Length: 205
Ligand code: MG
Image (cartoon, rainbow, N blue to C red; front, side, top):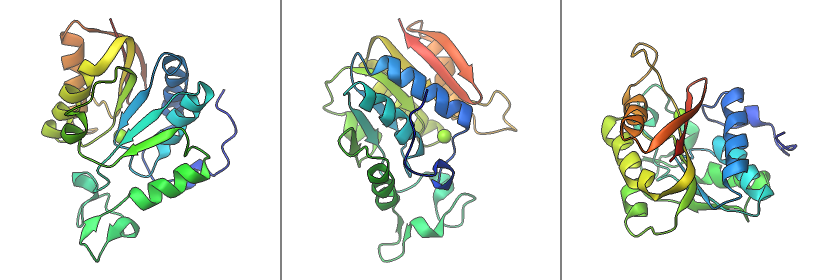
């Protein structure tokens, strides 16, 4: 059961269905007993809160990685651009302020460790084995491949790899997340555990 959250989750910007949120919480609750969790693509913190509550229950840590400059679809003139998250002085997207506000409101400042950086820079010297990795970053093939190659090898045996926005049908959505999901399965290093809406969950063998 997801604990009571002291804020209205529907008011938090982001793209995560209720059944996906529940699955993230359940798998993170199980995984974070064995080590830290890392998510890629925190945006305003919606999935971060579900994963963070699970980590908090185990006195574990959630690393929340995002450059907070928005993915392709968040940029000015694009479909999911949000003017409220645009820093017009600097001329760039900036979702970090909103992210921090939401994490604080959820009471997760002692559990969530934000990493404001790109995937490759953050992974370069990373050595800590991870109990769960949630990939929900950019949807270009380049971004998704980078996320997968940087972080999948850092999963400990028995760890969980979750990937958001899987669409078998190209008409329903971009194919990059599904491409790395298939790569993970083809590698022989992962077994499928669950499929919830557009969320795929794999177990590291
Ligand atoms: Mg997503």
